[in-house]
Length: 289
Image (cartoon, rainbow, N blue to C red):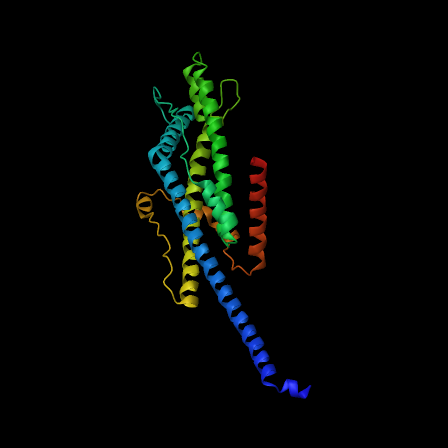
C-alpha cells in the first residue's frame, strides 16, 4: 500500500486532481466576477433608462405648466382676489369683468410604465428614489381625478345658459350663492391641478438627481473593480426651466424630504420601505392585468 502511495502513478493522479480543483475554482471565480460585472453594467443601463424616463416626465409637465396651467391658475387667482374685494365692499367698482377660461387641460403622454419597470423591478434602489417614484404615480392619478372634476363643472356651466351673471361668477370663483350655499368645486379643482402639476415636476426632478447619483456610484464601482471605462451616466439639464421660475420651491417639500432620506442598501429601514412600495406596485399591476 505504501508503495502505491509513493508511486509515480499516485503522484500524477493527485497532481491531476489538485490541478482540476484549482482550475475549477479559478473558473468559478472568473465566472462569478464576470457575472458581477454584467450585473453592474445592467444596473448602469437600467439607471440611464430610468433617468431618461424621469427627465421626459419632468420636461413634459414643465411644458404643460409653462404653456397652460401657470397662466390659467394665475389669471383665475388674480380675478378671484379682485372679485372678493368687490363683493366684500373693500373695493368700489361699477362693474366686474372676467373671462371664464374653460379650455380643457390634457395630460401629456409620458413613459411612466417604463420608469416603474426600471425602478421597481430592475434597479437596486431603496429609500427616497423609490418613494419619489411612488409619489409621481399617485400624484398623476390624483391629477387625473381633479381634471375630471373640473371638466364636470365646466359641462354644468355650459348646460345652464339661464344662470344669471352673479350666480355664475360666484360658482366660478367659489363664493356664497344667493341662498347662502357655497360651491367651491371649480376653484378647488383648478387649485388641485396647479398643485399636482408642481408635485410631478418636483418629484420627477428629485428622482433625476437621485438616479444620476446612483448611476455615478455604480460607474465608479465598475471603474475601481474592473479597471475599465464603463458607459457614462446620462446628463439632464433643467436650467432653462429654473431660469423661468417653473421649478417649485424646495421649501414646499422640506418635510417630505426629511421623511425620506436616501439610505444605503444595507440599512434595514431603506430595504423595508423599498419592499413595501415595490410590493404595493406589483399587486396593483396584477389587479390592472
